[in-house]
Length: 309
Length: 249
Image 1 (cartoon, rainbow over the protein chains, first blue to last red):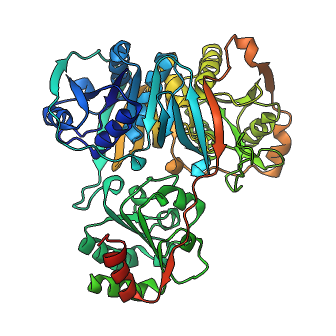
Image 2: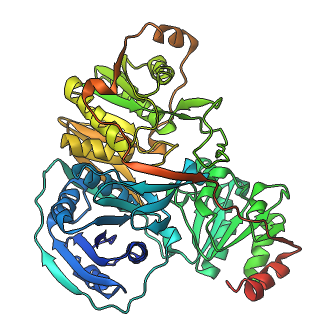
Image 3: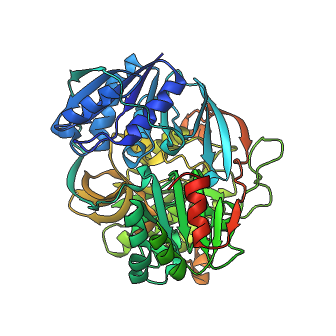
């Protein structure tokens, strides 16, 4: 069995999502190769070679791959597919964009968002926003899979796989990159942060959100999240949203402040190792999933918490 | 230009679903069904493009049980011009849906297909990309802004960490993200009018597409519950527990 993992990177750094996807690949079992498709992404390819359990890195370097456009990247994976039994990617926006295209070109039904590998052809995946878990068996000869990285652990960096430069597969030229606006921040990324502090509608305004949540985040070196209600009310930007319609996270510590705990939010954070809820309403559903609950006014509790850290 | 909008009938997003005790699936009997919310956004976007004079016709298509006609009537009431229902019983996987949609696109020759990025029942997030692959068209997934230009569409996409803008040659596939627009409600007069709009009924067999599932669902179960922990009295106790009991600080 040979598995090709599609690497997530920004042409400079290899994302931790890749190390987690390699963990999923190792659980399926077999020779694990990693594909780094990018422009000037040599350092990311080197980093992929260091991941434990990786036997080989394939590095395709071309302008066509600079921005992860789905059509050329999918064509490249399809070109390589003959040599592999499983094509696997983290279920990031890049992986979700490319892999179904690969699957259709290979006439394979993709298995999305795998959270557990039961065996080489059987997997668990969430449906209905994580309110039910399906165990599915794939009868396709080749498997195309995306994995929910929050349920896998990043493999270590003790490997020394060779990096092989490969040719590209051309570009059908149906899409072109225009621009990108990536939020600049010194804070860790939500999906890879060890600690996350999130705010809900109870914050009341964007100013209060900044004033109360950010100092604690700074002190903890935490990423900042928000509930859908807080985002919809304009208290926090879109890309902070944790939940079924936002990011799915699983940090070691998740602190929910003024978040009631709607199903759609819980779907995005209930796999966190330790959950803390701070809420004025002692009947808030968030307390049903919290390891530690504090019934308190967050405007008093959070500054006190920050001082005590 | 013609815009094709595929829509799916799913359990209403407000319904708390129940897993059948025998593990055979999710209870769908006597449950409120609605149009997939991401597809509503797709219908709305197509209608706005038509209202802006950028498109002449909006055709909606659904693959599903006979009752999916209700979902199509909703789209017609919102303002779509005509509808196509492809009847198929049971769950039809995204790959089979994409193959059927390809046949529809080959007949209808739309310049744009707009559809939801995922259905809120199977959460697969595949159909749009698969359709793009089968048609050989460009795709702009997870769209939060769509601007039509001459022979192309400029689409802003929601990606991890921010936004990406790409330009896709028409014909193309666009899949919608939540913030693209806020769908309208159908007015009562429009709901009445929708009953008379054309709705073409076909079956999956008419297209010669094999819709039998490739994935075998072995079991459907409730997610592992998380037990409620303890309530702490004050901030000092919280910090103490996080440091000494949980060891996460």
